[in-house]
Structure formats: C-alpha cells, structure tokens
Image (cartoon, rainbow, N blue to C red; front, side):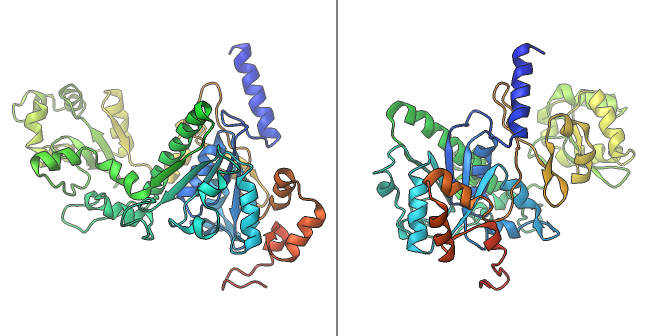
Length: 432
C-alpha cells in the first residue's frame, strides 16, 4: 500500500470516528423533503458520498419508519435509509413552518422532494420564486408520472407505475397473473436516475451558475427497463409475454431444482459455455448433437434443454452444482437467501454488510455503499435516529437562531426536538 493510500485510509477512519461526512460531495448541502422510499433513498445516495443532507419530517415521522421490520419499536429500515442525515422536524402545514423551510432552501445546493405534483406550490415553495434568492438551487422532483402530462396529478407508487410502464405484465409465470417483486425496485431505480440528474445539474451549474429542475418519474424509470421491446413492437408488432424463470429463445438459462430442494441459476448461453457445461455434467456428447450444438438450435428446444439440465441438477445439491460449474467457468449461482448473504465472505470483503454503533442495540448491520470510488469513497458514518434528533442544531448552524427563538418555535409546535416528538401520539394521528 502506498503512503498516499495509507493516508487516505487514515483520513477516512478519522472522518468516520468523528461522525463527519466524507466523499466527493463533501461541502454540498441537500434538503430532503421527500418521504417513503424514492426521495429518502435518493438523498441517502448523496449522503453516503459526503453531502450534508438535512431531512425534514413532520412530528409523526416519515411513513418509511412504519415500513419493514421493527425491533423494540425501532424501525430497522429507517436506521438504514435515513443514515448519514441530520433529522429535523417542522410542521410544514403552517405558514411559519413553510417560511422556515424556505429559509433552509436558500442555504442549500439541492432540494429533493417526492410529493404529488403541485404540492410544493400549494405550500408557497415554488421553485421559480425560491431561485430569485438562490439562483443556483437544483430541485429534484420525484413523482409517479412526472410534473407534466395528463397523468401528472395521479397519486403513484412504484407498483402502480410498473403496471402502467408494462413491467408488471412481464413478471411472473406465463400461466399465472402478473406477479410482483417483493422489493422496491422501481423506487430505487428512480432514485438512482434522480441522483444522476442532480450530479449532471451540478456539473452544468459549474458552467452557468444556474440551477435547474430534475423531473424524475417512477413510471419512466420502470419503462426504461422495456427498452428492447419498444422497437420490436413498432417493427414486428410483438407484445412480450411473461416467461417465468426462462430467458426467451435461450437455453440453458433458467432456475434449476437441486437435490436439497433449492434452486440454482445456470446461464450457459453461448456455445463455448454450453460445451463446458455438458462436460461438467458428464454428458459431453450433447455439445456435438446437432439438436443442441448451437445457440440457434437450442433456442427452439428450450423446454427440452431445460428438462435435460433439470434431470442432472436434481441429482446434486446446490453447493455441489455451484462448485462443479464454477470450476468449469460456467456462470452459476445458488439462489441466496438473506441468511446465505450474512454467511458469505464476498459480501463482507466488499463491505456490503456494515456493522455500525446503535444507541439501543449496541451494533446494527446495514447495507454498504455502492458504487465504490477508488480515491474518494463513500461511507456510512451515522445511522438514522429519532424524528427531530437534529432540529435544534440545524436551526442554529444554518439559520443562526438563538435559544430564545428556538424555544418560542417549540412552544408554538412549529418545530419539534426529539424530546418533544416522544410526546406525539402516533397511533391515531393526534398529539398528546
């Protein structure tokens, strides 16, 4: 390891120990007004790479705190997706609360919101108006169907956007109704597009000094997955169908059952890999059989090919198959569960399972940072915490409010510290 690398590593560890942001976005400030998944995940990506992210919540908290599993009444999902952020609570339903948020918008580089289109305008936080005082402001707007178009006013979640985008039609077995992936795939994909847009806007701002609006929609992010099917429909009239685990017109490329009741993914698409697969299976003659010897010939015998591979796979455990085929350089993987992931050395070596201090559990493991930058890597330096944890410090640091002013705002229930939030009764939406 070079002296430069050693110094970079030491600096990184020092930053983590001091709970300081680090990474290429250090020095940039982001205001997160979003909720649930797409907005918070977009902001989390920026926070992981050093941006100072200030998240604004109502006293009842972001709905994401009610998603996923809880332990001792602590949202485990929120501990991860709200990590590396300063958490403040402001009542944005009041004029005074809206004015506070406006003041904060004048102190940041990027604002992220994922309300229904028109909501910010109704709150008096119109982008064009804000940029009179902060012309360099970049506004990231995430919504179900975009800021324009006939569907713009519709409420939208990832699942409904997937349906409109044609993606749900493609998921599942052909003889069953469309299925769902039990993960927030479209929310995360949209957040990545939104974060990418914000980085392009920062580059452009370096040239012009002007900010701009990034209009990222869930349905367009989902629709981007349909890229190969757009020209195929126009030119050939092909409406793609659900195919289950198979890859259309390609074999062997599917999930295959194992002796121990699991599944293994084998992808022997081209002829060279197929030959290696047949040798590993002890059936090298298949690679010379004209019915299976070429990718084209196998493409019209997908079911037949899958039956042959399945007959072999069911005679071996998943780990046996994985070991034999990886040795033969055949792309293969067992279908991991989260328990398998926690036992896998690759995830830990790549720092994808990060163990962090937690005030209640002592330690809590969260997902790591991606992508990896060689010179200025991102990091997890603080887990998400209670609503309003940083309200007071943010208002002091950014707006210069004194203790008297903060106490006055608290007394009028315009802002909330963590101690005040504990008095808010969430169960029926009323305050104690």
